[in-house]
Image 1 (tube, helix red, strand yellow):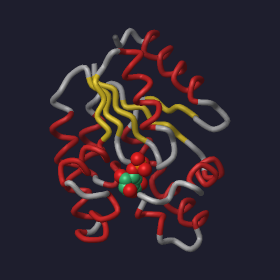
Image 2 (image 1 turned 30 degrees about the horizontal axis):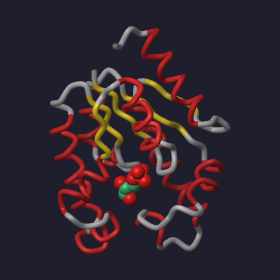
Image 3 (image 1 turned 180 degrees about the vertical axis):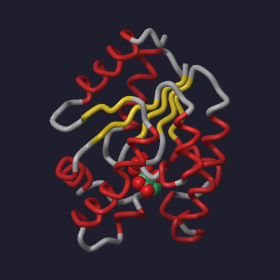
Amino acid sequence: MKLILIGFMGSGKTTIGNILSKKLNMDIVDMDLEIEKKLNISINDIFNLYGEKYFRNKEVELLEKLLKKDNIIISTGGGIIETKEVINMLKEEKLVIWLNADIKTTVNRLKSELDNRPKLKYEKNLENTIKNLINNRYYKYKKASNIIIDVNNKNIDEVVSEILVYIDKNMLL
Ligand code: S3P
């Protein structure tokens, strides 16, 4: 089984992915970390030195490789769905989970976590930037995913158990 987590920055992909990896005894790859490791440079520096397009190409390349594996959880970067090719790739998968956080939840969570987030770090009006990005990406996440989990007003354990129930019910393990 492959389980792919998508969703906006701050939606909990990494934390939830790590917990699921232990509970389900599956490998996990955090795509941002993997790209940083491979290029030996931070996400911030990748954006600053080479630009977003370069980063998106690296994401596509890595995702293509990861989708060939099995028994893996893939925690994607929030902008993975910005590439059309990726949406088409994800549409072929059985378990693409969109952790859907609204603007308010996202702003609250991200306020203090902007350091390695070049899409937000340099913006003066954080709320507006987040709002525009979420609105722009909403249908892309929707298109790419087959399960939507509303993560607003829920703690990590609640989200994890919702995912586990879904997997169990649909006999995906
Ligand atoms: C991005 C999200 C980040 C990272 C990069 C771009 C985005 O990942 O890939 O900063 O465009 O939303 P997280 O969602 O893990 O923060």
